[in-house]
Image (tube, rainbow, N blue to C red; front, top):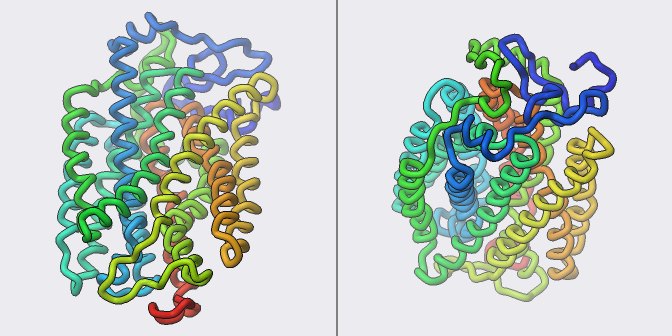
Amino acid sequence: MAGSDTTPFLSQADDPEDGPVPGTPGLPGSMGNAKSGEPEIPDREGLQRITGLSPARSALIVAVLCYINLLNYMDRFTVAGVLPDIEQFFDIGDSSSGLIQTVFISSYMVLAPVFGYLGDRYNRKYLMCGGIAFWSLVTLGSSFIPRERFWLLLLTRGLVGVGEASYSTIAPTLIADLFVADQRSRMLSVFYFAIPVGSGLGYIAGSKVKDVAGDWHWALRVTPGLGVVAVLLLFLVVREPPRGAVERHSDSPPLNPTSWWADLRALARNPSFTLSSLGFTAVAFVTGSLALWAPAFLLRSRVVLGETPPCLPGDSCSSSDSLIFGLITCLTGVLGVGLGVEISRRLRRSNPRADPLVCAAGLLGSAPFLFLSLACARGSIVATYIFIFIGETLLSMNWAIVADILLYVVIPTRRSTAEAFQIVLSHLLGDAGSPYLIGLGSCPRRGPRTTASW
């Protein structure tokens, strides 16, 4: 396929050395091309026969995975919702608080290949159960750290990466083994709705729980209880579907796992995977810094404009910006993911390059609006919010499409590994460093807490 001039860019299949390849013309899940005809797609009864799961059970499994994905991102951004209070409690600056996200992302990035390897070879359900249970325990423990032990907060946030790595590398591959073609795209869009919605709920829950309890520590005690519910749902509802069965002809041999190094070599030779991962890295760089610093930036903009007083030692930082930014993140995520998937689906009929083109348009189109949001912050908070809304909507168009690209250009026995290394690349060059770099650049320009230049 790779050598054919009719093969769409970013629709090339993975190395087929060990069996039939998803995405190959004639196989379910393929985008195909004009010369190959329409791909063969199992009907509802065919999917049930192949997976051993009824359509209702498959949909319920996706619902459970969506709940956990939402919880995953809710926990990640609860910290951002109470970041000014954390800075005040531990008496740290922007560079140190930027490390909170950097340490978490670095741990998540290192552990992702481990769970990617395990996810391609062992029971995915039990791997997720163990990871989420550990994550819930560590998150709860992080809420009891005394003010003189900031290093311990960094350590616990790093350990949280265990649970998130166990889930993020595995869950999309379960969806890929339950659905094909447009069904898969729709289910992935539902799954990735949980990223912006969960992120927004993290800001909202963090700020509102802090306000109700009068203590930011309680914001970190919400998601562990919900994590216990997630483990129970995984154990009781989710069943392990056969890997790649929905994408094989009945007379095709099963796909057998190859060595880890063989997987890496095949992925490195897959231009569709590598280029889409590099593009997604740019998205991660922007969203990582925006997610951590936007509420604090908006609060400080209000201080500069004289709309709110600066945070004083011993007082809780009072601002509605975490709540508003959280709502914007929820709305733009739902709008952006849905818009991206629908535009791509319609354009795909006439242009086989629709997926990467929509992703590129969303990423490039967001840049001027995010720049304008920064430029307007000293003059109008309302204008800043409007430009953030547009910019985040365009960025969110990438989430589900990039995931779909990975699933149709990588064979089933390598998908968890591919997910893991896409995570490593996007975080290593993306949001692992961007929050810290923004905080590091901010420190020399900040005045004392009691002044407007704070």
